[in-house]
Image (cartoon, rainbow, N blue to C red; front, side, top):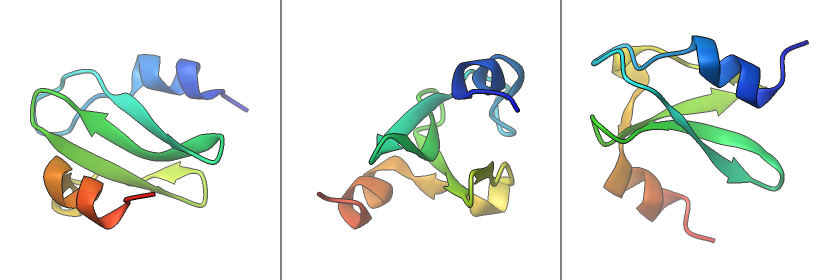
Length: 67
């Protein structure tokens, strides 16, 4: 099984093909953020949902996931 760093080396933002950054929560990635597009792709059951339609604007994501 791949770890997060290995996965990030092969995944790219489906909008701009840019690199992604993990947004950790309780020790695991809850979302993958694209700094260029300012969106977050959710991770559900350890599976990144890499669909343009699944992307959430970063500001909205931050508001919904306040600790």
